[in-house]
Image (tube, rainbow, N blue to C red; front, side, top):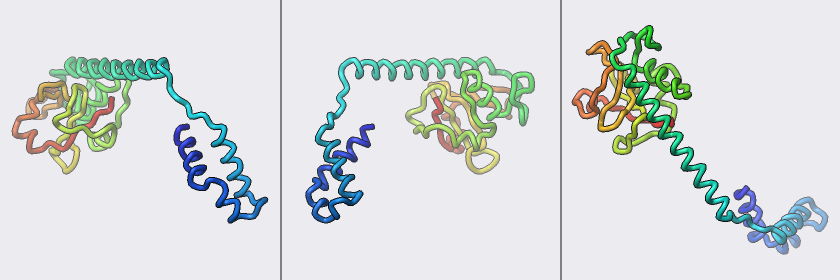
Length: 192
C-alpha cells in the first residue's frame, strides 16, 4: 500500500501534469491518466500509524519472538530426549534410529516445522546465520563424507550441538570447537 502511494506521489511530482498535457494530445489515454493522478494526489491523505497501531504491531512482534523462543526450547528439549538413540543410515524415527537429517527432520516436526529429508536440501531452507550469532535451535552443517552440507546437527547453546555420532553409534552432544568439526564447518541456518 505504501509503495503504491510513493509511486503515485512520485509520478505527480515528476510530471506535474502540465508538461505532459502539452506534449500529449488533449484526449489521449495518457492525458486522462495524468489527470486522474492529479486528482488522486490532490485529495490524498497519507496514512499515519497512531499509538494504538504501533503498540499492536509491537505486541505482535513480541508474540512472534516468544513463539520462536518457545519453539527453540521445544526443539532443544526434544533433541535432548533423542540422546542415546541408535544411529542408523536412513533412519527417521526413534524406533528405527536416526541418521543426521532424519534426526533433524523428526525433531523439527515435533515443533510443527516440516523440513526436507536430506542435509544438503535442508541447508537450502531458512536464513543463513553467522557462527557468532548462533542461537539454540539453529541448524549447523558440516562437510563430511561428500562436498557441501553432508552432516547436520541442532545447536543447543554454549558451542554444543546434538547430532548423530557415527563414531559413538548414538545421538550425542558434540562441541563446535572440536578440531574435526572446526575443519569441516559448512554453515548454519535458522528456520524458526
